[in-house]
Length: 254
Image 1 (cartoon, rainbow, N blue to C red):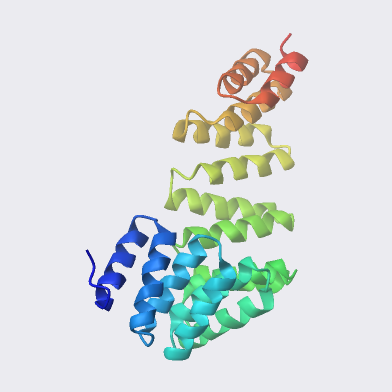
Image 2 (image 1 turned 60 degrees about the vertical axis):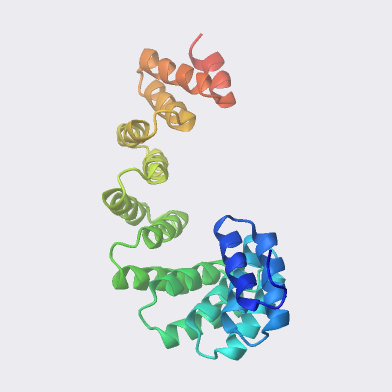
């Protein structure tokens, strides 16, 4: 049983609840700690993160504001507030916070990626691309930076650049099934069905139970005249729960 006046006990219990993903319970304990010791910065940061994790972004921002008030140059405070603002669609506010992070820590690759995402939300495509590229320059092994840049390049129909980014992701993480599927989809846009089949085959090797990979690989095979093999893929997709496979089987495999 906690001594009601022992502030640090509430802090440590809140931290433990955070670790167990009991964010509501953690917030309750952080509230009690703040009643007993309202000037501890870490409590506001931790409570803000707990609120963020239950999607109370407004409450999180309020806590990050207090944290920044107590620690004016806190990189994590500005970063976390920027992320919360993005989820509230305050993209300009989010960018301002990431600007501050970058001012305080010019090599903060995460901040460039997050700022780029907010810029993309404002249709600042050039600014977003510049930020994603800068993050990669800082950290050439930053998988998520390649991923968001690949998405953006794909949307701009820079398919060669997008494929290059997906290939880099695959080198960094050969089990990233999303990269294989996305690269395969681009190959279809380019009408390179053999190339698409190659990516979907690799996706299946990584994750044999993905119905989409079988569905699209099967469709590509049928387009290339490989009906028997393609229909086997469609049947496998159906067995794995793809409702679209049933339609394709009725159309192509009867």
